[in-house]
Image (tube, rainbow, N blue to C red; front, side, top):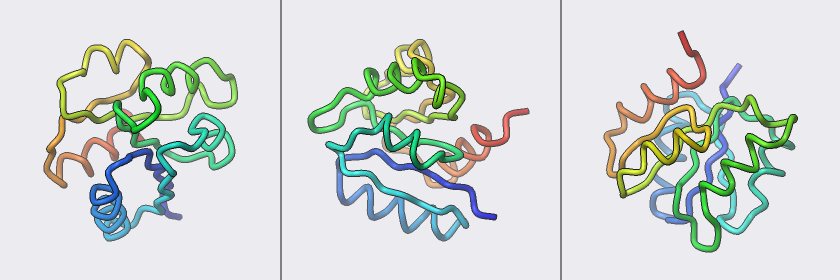
Amino acid sequence: MSKKVLLAEDDMTMVSLLKTLLKMEGYLVIALDADADIPAAVQHEKPDVVLLDVHLASQSGLEIMDAIRRSSDTSDVRVVMTSGLNLREECLNHGANSFLLKPYMPDDLIETLHRAINPS
């Protein structure tokens, strides 16, 4: 069974590239509109992992992360946050399981997602 990745990213080129890459790796990818109610989508979709950009067009990834962790329905969902700025500490402090600094290599993304879904 394919692992489900919920993608919250506002750069449409990045969304297209990530969808292609992740599908090639066997993931089921659901890309959300950057203005979507992401915590509600996480609750509805029950993904194996969320790939969440810190800076969405009209939303803060850190606030979304807080909302995901506050809800008992989503508090244990695995989340990998990404940003072009090194916000690793802030993301981890808000409850992210991992952080990737953009631009990242495809292999780094796949390895990070794998580790997030299958923690040792």
